[in-house]
Length: 226
Image 1 (cartoon, one colour):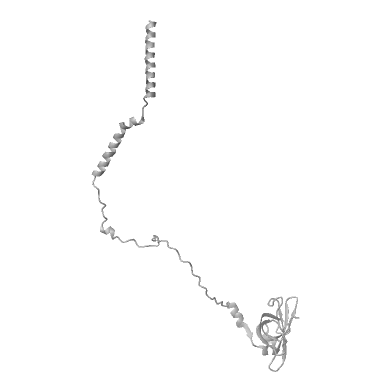
Image 2 (cartoon, rainbow, N blue to C red):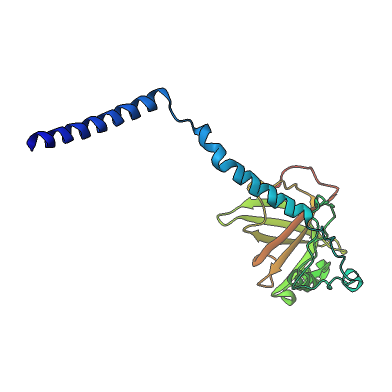
């Protein structure tokens, strides 16, 4: 009994071994190629693709329908601020600079000051300076001396009236003249000052001093700065 069982088992083992050896030899000497499998499904894909192309060719080509005349001539919506029509970008021209002369107007305060200044009243002032207390005056006088003080400058002017009477005026300056002013003895200057005491010897504050170019006959051209 055991002999027959062993024989059957040996036969099965021999059969399985031979099948494995044959399969191995077949794969080694006759390997499968990927190209052998392609003909099985490639024709089907090509055929299906050909059928789709044929169906497309058979379908009639519909011409594009032209829009109705009403739609073709439909006016464009008006341009509004909410939906402005985009404008084509263009290069902006470079700005042109135009040089113009600017006339500086005097401020109202300066005009009022000019109106409040009493001009050309030398005779009346020197005959009665008390009448000009608190007034601003402007007149042309000849320079005599300019003396340096702790607060600035003390200027001395002379005036010859119609009756050949000589009068003197002293004016104090704190911020009008520079450190080294060019003042000449006997030269005529136009000065503006404030008369705070109604006197010619004191209380007069300089607000303007400009040379007129004129000079007295006795002017030597020497500096008036002491």
